[in-house]
Length: 211
Image (cartoon, rainbow, N blue to C red; front, side, top):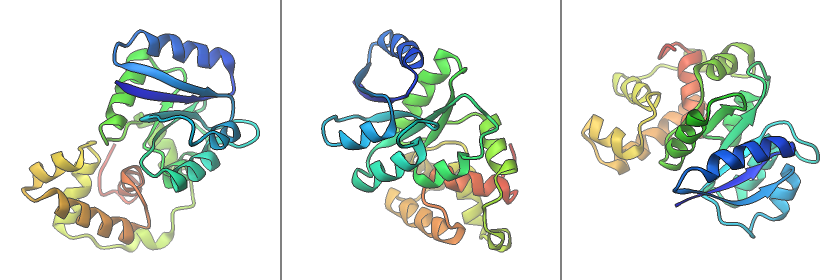
């Protein structure tokens, strides 16, 4: 059973997501909050596998709430929800630790797919969102463009961009999971990122991969 926590300030959106999730046999909503502050104030009261969190909310927005939640519970897997593919905040959300984005106008199948992928330690967000995060956001440091990567690092980045888990990466590259974790940590230090999604954005921005 995949336990899902929903953090969304619009009740009609919560109701719609709830209806979708309740139709999926191995999904269950374990809690709902109307803003980021409610979530943070009740962080220890609900055990969830995946958090669906709106970006724009009163009291405490989704980005700041995600930073605070992951600082306390780093095992949480957060998917950001948004109405606007042109938002300025996507790269900030990736750096905050979000593992995916789902537009509120996406299909129910995309919502289910996104939750399953993030639950299984993969990333999920549409190409449109990734494109906006790369093109519109100008906070990526210029020094990143001058970083030189080895062939193995480029291969690893390419496979990360395909959404593979650490186990799948290890199988693809014929090394141990521990070796993959070590290589990824080195890549994150090089690129000034802190998770798979951040690496993907960096890779596209610096033309290591194409979308």
